[in-house]
Image (cartoon, rainbow, N blue to C red; front, side, top):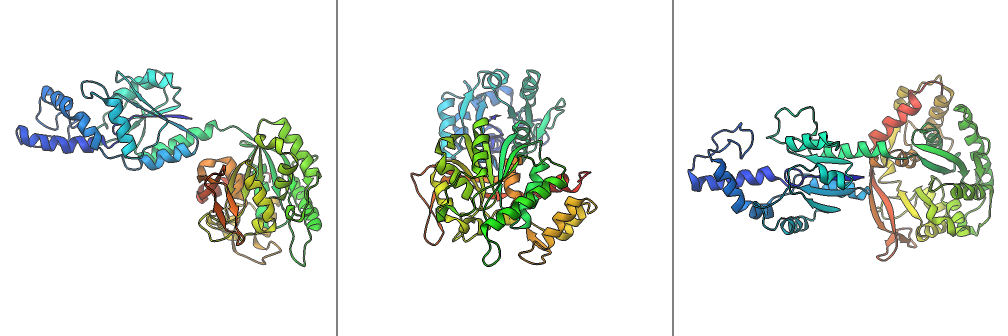
Length: 480
């Protein structure tokens, strides 16, 4: 998405700098100070300067002042976040002669000095920025001048007024924001409305813990965002309890149950995957791999959401490397990049599979467990508050949450796997850091290599937003 930003009073703290400079200069003129603190603006009646004096001051000093302005609070932080989300930022400003002699050079140097990243700088010759917005296909524009916003709005530009101390005059029903948090939220809201539906394969060890069952249910109730093309069964095992082959059968049956609760047709949608681990030499064209290949060939892009051992994905990439460019992997596994090791269940089950996928060059987003998904803690009491327990699916999920059969009775736990589903539903709930794909050291910690290809790591998530969406879809819907 293309975001347009005025510079002065949006990116830079223009009013603060101008007020300081006017106070200094006033002492040299008549030393009367501020004569009207409630004036429309600093240059319009706050001081007893004539229009000619104001004009002369700007002509002689504006370029100097522009070099020393501070960025507005939050500007760099939120601009970087938007760029990291893949948006483009166009700085559209009316910095012209006679206030500036070298406006482009002055502005570029100021942006560089303050480490402010952007896509393109556009300096307009008039205060009407409508043409610049239209020519550059701007999706949303933010400006602090009421008259500018009115012109852009009337020209069909999706424009917001950035509120300041001096523009609280009637705004002709303009949409407005109070600061950079609001700017970012409006960008996220518009971006979310423009997001396409994703073709998804869910790769899951469904019977392993309760969180997989929540994730599958959440996914099936998110048809507004996701097209579920298939569910593939990932391997899991517990020492002296469940072997991989048995775990695969149990997970297959659990998937059937979830589909049944939601009255979804499971025919030709659930497929058994690997019956051993990649690190043990498993490399077979099982039913899951065959279906993955079929789906990936049909779609422009297929998201494989892996919430168990990443074995099936590694096998797929090893057998069919030619399909790499048509898939995107979202994997819940390992721990935060700040963690000392990755002794986490999904990770340590098949370390060689993780390493192979990391080094394959595939487009990949990792949702770490401890430090990120671990924020998704809730309680049986919260679930029972939001879930109608007369509905079979809700009763089933709450029962499995309370006693998942492996960890015993637990009143509070993390529903880890919904994080990967939530990332596809709304990526703006996550803070992402793009890093070089790591190698895995003997102690299972990461070693990030400078020249390796890039993958994305989630470093934070908005647990409240995710649970609000989950409760809305699973707790309040009728007919579950």
